Image (tube, rainbow, N blue to C red; front, side, top):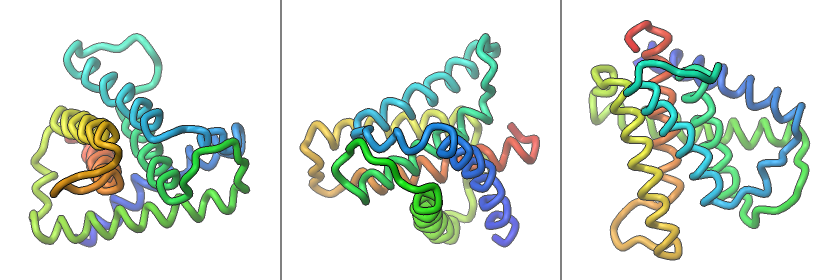
Length: 181
């Protein structure tokens, strides 16, 4: 488990470095995004991964690893947006944004550790295709929850689906780093 924790933190750190650099370049323009817009951004990236996997070729420079990093970052944005509420034109300082990011990473990592305990790191034997498919499934679930005005009868909410997306993306990044994908 110690290796997983370190690998997880490395995968997230790479994604966070990009996130913070983009925050310095663009500010927090993403604060205007409503939940459905965040979901659609992740959907585009996950669908692109799936298309590249199926066609075994790509024409745009960003590789699958970059797309998984983008998915992780947008899912963090989704969690931050849920926490802050009221998507609006608002510029957050970089240090505040970094703290919000780290808070959500810790939440996702805590969930990962609990699930890894119970599932025995089954994700290590999963295919990259499964990660893309599971992310797409979680996005479709969020869309359905939104159509139900955010209400569920017995299912987890939007936040839990974002956490799963973060963790699937981190797992894919770990396996890419290990050369398994």
